[in-house]
Length: 390
Length: 191
Image (cartoon, rainbow over all chains, first blue to last red; front, side):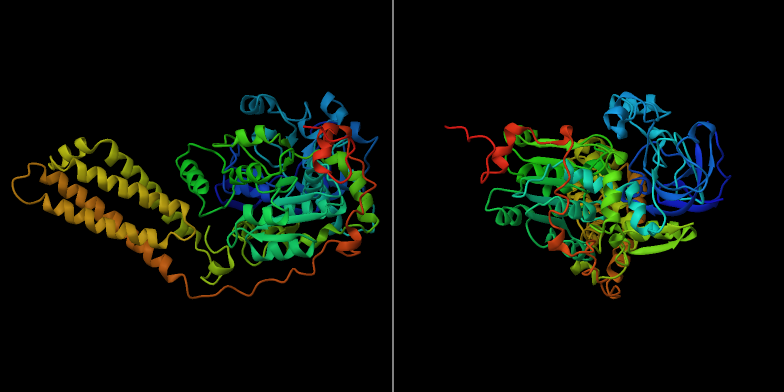
């Protein structure tokens, strides 16, 4: 089959690789009908995340049709079922899964000892996202082997196009969880750093959850235009001070809820801390560039909440914990517990409350994937979200 | 990355290879600068330039500042041209050490050859970056109609009010009055 394969920093190729097969009775194989490039795939493309090996298949936003089912998954799946595959692989049986904390499933990361060395404990296995999270093949391919398939799937009905459903795999529940973590009140201002795909979903989620005011912070004109279309007030951080504008919008008190939809690769040229991060990262003395975390801690209203869906990978420097502690801020973070939200979100799509396909700017064949990685990374051609059709 | 704002859009397409070269030169600048600041005596001894340790350390500070400028700026072009000027200064300074009876003239020759090589890279990088300007990018895509809300934004605000946050995702009760001053669920604490 054809698949997008990681060979090294900024080197992703569309290769011919062996078809996957059932390896365990709980497995299923799906024929991929649509998959997407995620912003967090760019951390792998640029090799900011450790644990990739040449030959790894990329991708964790995937949907398709079940073509083969292992013996132990036959109770819940059958050939022909239409499924979206969540990016987190879940067993559905461990203590964390039973609590709904699917992204920290205790059993699906087959390289759990590596993750435990890095993070203290293992987290869930993920599709196509380094050997720290299990080294599972990803879904930017013609076929995908789904481990623990009896639990790791979202059944979706026929009659709704892939484009409306695909993002149940990651960015829609990720944006939703980011907003839910804020426990939004009708009087709240929610400020969202980063108007990429997750930021766009967080904006829509905050609107649906009834925020009085949603503010989106970015500098890419197309992203800001899309954020505005979704009901956000926009701040271009290249052209105005984020802190001053947020204070102006909130009567000097700051936003009650702040969402970091940027993560480890913040671009904030011109600020002192951004220069500091660039130098430290370039000289391998810091893994991530946490400008957004610092700015959120500074501007957030006392007793407010910082919600962090943005991906961080390692060690962060100069975090103003004094501000966080003295202002009594709550930090909520984590990879998304996808299956915890998807029944509810699927219903909202079916009822027409939201149509997540608004975010798609490019749809191409799998063989054009390597080129689209570069275009997406460089934010060329108005690229915000790429869907691949194998 | 460059070319990411309205202003820089007008400069033309990003050239990732040249950007990477610029960043490499920035890193080199910092590394060389640190060496010059940390060990001016050893360098002066190796080049037969005793008595000029202060000048070498000063050049080191210049290298570090230029390197930071390259790595931290959105557009490294002026900083790379700054490196070219610095290379000229380095070559001129090294040339003065060729005069007289300097026993380390062979080391000076090696150093000048190395600086000349780096100068060639600096000039190439600066010229390439400077040439990138004229071609404008295609016009901006129009996403102003992409609301994501089939019923429109205002009719969608609060449409998910039937959603009840799970217990482990709720704000602690004690913190709610501060976020809802108009409708406190508990009396405000008195001072």
